[in-house]
Amino acid sequence: MTDKPRLLSVADAEALSIQDVWRLHRDHISPRQVNIFSSFGYGHDLFTEAEGVWLTTSEGRKILDFTGGFGVLNHGHNHPRILKVRREYQDKRRVEVHKIVFSPMMVALAHNVAALLPGDLNKCFFPNSGAEAVEGALKVAYKSRPARRDHVLYAEDSFHGKLIGSGTITGCQSKVWDFPRMANTASFRRNDLDSVERQVAALRKTDGSSNIYAIAIEPFHATTMTTCTGEFLIGLRRICDREGIALIFDEVYSGWGKTGHLFYFMAHDVVPDILCMSKSFGGGKASISGLVVRDPVFAAAYGTDASALLQSSTYNGFGEECATALEAVNIMIEEDLPGRARHIHEVLNAGLTALAAKYPGTIREIRGYGGFNGVVLDSPFDLIEKALAHVPNLLGDKRFFINKIAAAAVADEMYRTHGILTTMIDNGDLVVYAALPSLVVNDSELRQFLDALDKVLDKGLTRVSAEFVGSKLMMMLKGLT
Image (cartoon, rainbow, N blue to C red; front, top):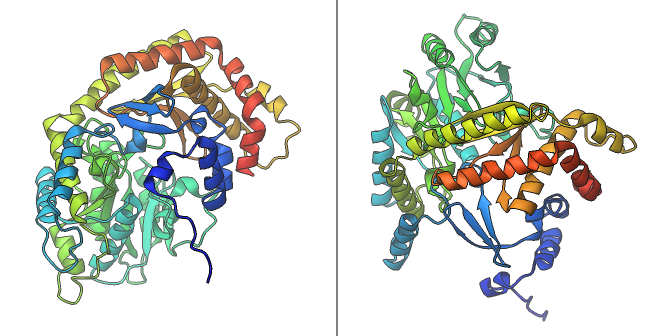
């Protein structure tokens, strides 16, 4: 009889050192991830507490979090109302799983979501992740068409997720997406209706009818911080109505106030057939997403007894997750998180504009909308290229990699020297050093970020990048190769 393995408890996990965490991560999750994340200052710290926009390390250092959990933390960390709702749900021993029994929490959440959305976007399904919501949207779109259609259109710079279906229509990963692909997809250029019309014209059946069942688009493109124009979104709606195509809006990242609108598409006179949402929908505590479908589209897809159960999952509408989302949505409205996003943009855009004027050879471009703000840096390409001259070209486009190094160097300096956690985002071609704070951030904290960035840029991007390359490059290369 073999000895039982020693299993770690929650208390054991809380007592792990950063070296223990690295070792276990290497053994049981991913060695390469350890190499990558430990290249940065934040990779050497463990965080024990979080509140609002602040993190506390195990050594008691306070860190200003300007990542916003990549869209998850519009409410900040551990919003007191959300904590209270979850505690009460647990204390009352409410029902969690309800595959075949009715859920008051799920129907109340569906009611609130539908009440906030325009038109007849009324039918809701609540899976776990944004990619799941996109997959569900593709299913609804396909099933709702009266005759079989084969194709999906998507924007060539899109990001819709990393599952097989959502990954297939994620255009910005086209260079690295080395997985099987869903058949019959084609791309178009964002904000270019002519490119959409060309694909529509090319993808017709022999009888002249369209062979496209869905067009998917992010109305706000978080990866590059750019918007679809109202004219483009309205044009897509017109094309879809004319051709009988289901229009999918993916606001997984941009939804729930981050753009200064509850959803960005609501700034324009257009309604999709299917809306995908997630991220801050769960208030920073619940793993929940949603897809919301117009009544006639839902009826065509799942309006019969035979089809009514085709859209399901084990954790759909999990009780505590729905209760959390209920409170999160109410907080967004009562605390006017979209209004806060607009104010954040006013402050950060003005500050970043001033920095661009002060450092014209360092900041090439300012980007932003609502709670999404950032800069495109003028990387010290020649200097770092010399450092990389004898490095095997395992990184693909060296110029793009150098742009990432420059943004990473700024993020590392901001963390190590100024105690501010920031990040960069990219779509495979463009790198944006990003300021993505939770929407509960105050003006003093916004100024703290701007003052710290000023000090980093004053030090010189060449110097900051050279120091980062000198101390971290080989470790990063180990993680990326």
